[in-house]
Image (cartoon, rainbow, N blue to C red):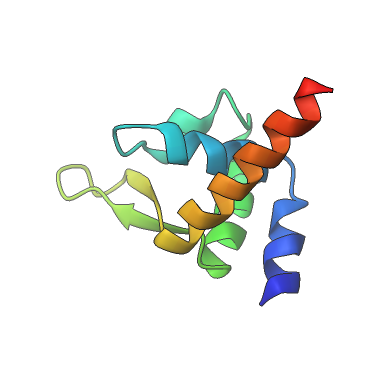
Length: 93
């Protein structure tokens, strides 16, 4: 499982998406992540891999079934906290 998470985190913008989800107060739609990772297909591919690793859950919006929200899991929160600290440490040097 660890290698699966590592593989997912190597995906473009996966770390930034996870940290964004940790810090975001409201539950975003997939489209709300466009500034972090442009391109619908690339964004959906990365999110699907993150969901497969248990870091996030994609849920259909009950009001707008076409739209899906992105929810960070408890596992995703733990990983994101660690990544946030590591990123801050790397940027401080």
